[in-house]
Length: 399
Ligand code: FEO
Image (cartoon, rainbow, N blue to C red; front, top):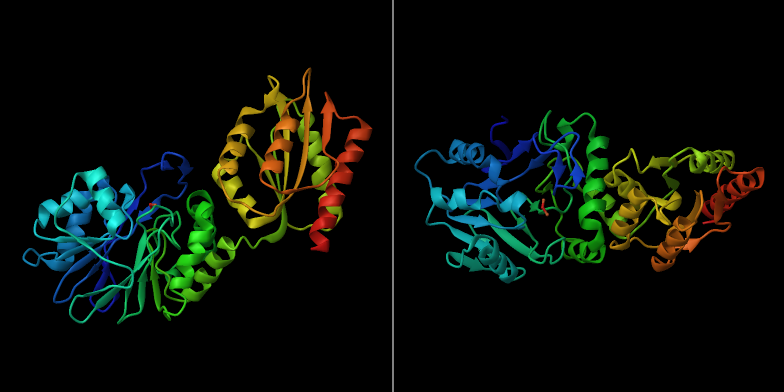
């Protein structure tokens, strides 16, 4: 167990690592776990910012006492985000420190009642309001729908630390250290911030942009999110990545997502991949929906400008695992992708038709030809696949 760790004078990280949960929100894989970050400010008044998942309450309370000792009490519990991965230990903290005041906004108060039946000991703050702890002052920025209605950020003015809630957070436990400059493979964590963003927060990109504008002039020294590393080396870097992702800026590359039962659709995929490579496209990510969890596919679709879907028909419909992905993407707000489609069928088509309806609904540019093969691909079908690859490559090069 990592002990409490100072992140600035009298400010401590008191988070926990979760190495047990396999699927975050029971959906998203956690190959290297996840951290629930919480912070404690020790001053004339003591404040905690967010808590941790309920299963870690005992370990968490030990950390609080590790900083405060047995006699000091907690005065304020600030809830930047009430989703239970952060509020799950709220009851345990309240039972230990029964006089504390919970700080949140009007929406937080609604959730305190509906999730925990708590209706008292709540101080409702407004946007830009300041809470004075003594030497430290916290200024609140309400950032609704990033990604819940009550989300907000708290800015500690003395150390210029932004406690940002889920914003800038990512999957992965904190092993070598909690700070970005203590972690050797920080690229892995940046990728996991993109996965968290694209899987969970990205749908609310417009609101993320509003939140980023509200903090644009803060001259931030440290970003302390609820998940993943504390960004102190170059906080501007993670802000700039988040800004690009939420503005839907993409890299020139192609995600080729396919399914194949007996190799016929796969053969078409190979022809398209060779064609893209032959045209000099360096970033081509091939994903098989039967092997790759959609969490990683969604991350890649968020990253790259072009996406090509290939699916066999299954009982007159889209291959079921491809259908799951399409349904999820249909509820996202991913804009301005260049798309291509292909597929195969045995005795009845249907998959490509559904894919075409999907890209039309998303208002994505569809590159022709759409290629569909009855049974094994003929030479003409393979040539059409090669043409599709060339035309997608040409779109990327001309952008
Ligand atoms: Fe990390 Fe939205 O909870």
